[in-house]
Amino acid sequence: MDSLECIQSRRAVRHYLPQMPDDELIEKILAAGRLAPSAMNRQPWRFYIATHSDTISAFSKAISSAVLHEYTKKVLHHPIKTMRELMHAGKVGFDTGDPVFHGAPVVIFITSPADNEWAGLDTGMCAQNMMLAAHSLGLATCPIGMAKYVGLTDIYHRLEVPETEKVELAISLGYSAETPKMPKRTGGRAVFIDRMECC
Ligand SMILES: Cc1cc2nc3c(=O)[nH]c(=O)nc-3n(C[C@H](O)[C@H](O)[C@H](O)COP(=O)(O)O)c2cc1C
Image (cartoon, rainbow, N blue to C red):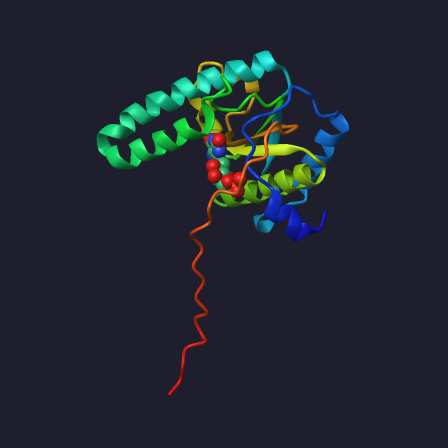
């Protein structure tokens, strides 16, 4: 698939078939993540992968409880913003019975060292590489920002993430059971700062 076509046609997928992707495909996707650029080439990403539905479902339940708890606290300080975010979350994920990972057969948690100031950008690039690679291999993904709340759950230890790392996000991965439309793009105003009319 041509790169631009891949970028244009990738979608966040929230309904998956039960079919498990081969390990070889998962390895290719991880390899694409490792090829991402990173500040000072530190390559801060680490991957923690769940492939059992019981494990994924336990994390999904624990994370959704943690998210609800956090949002209940936030709503007191930022009621409108928080309600908007909750309504969005409600729209995007509660019909598969798995409000966090949308029933995907594979979940890849991405961590980075907690003390790396560029890690958020680096892991974002790594995740995008992985999602585009997955799409070009016929697989579907969804970036799961909510997964960062896994650190607040009582089953976090099951990920075996060292104390020096933190979860940045997760990617749900599998074969798509839907064809989502592209959500409207409205942002990204561009200003050519040196093309002003001169008199
Ligand atoms: C940092 C980040 C966090 C996200 N977190 C979630 C999430 O927790 N759950 C979810 O269903 N989608 C999540 N998304 C997916 C976005 O909702 C989705 O990318 C956006 O609506 C645009 O749709 P598209 O990816 O199909 O173009 C996240 C996306 C990004 C970039």
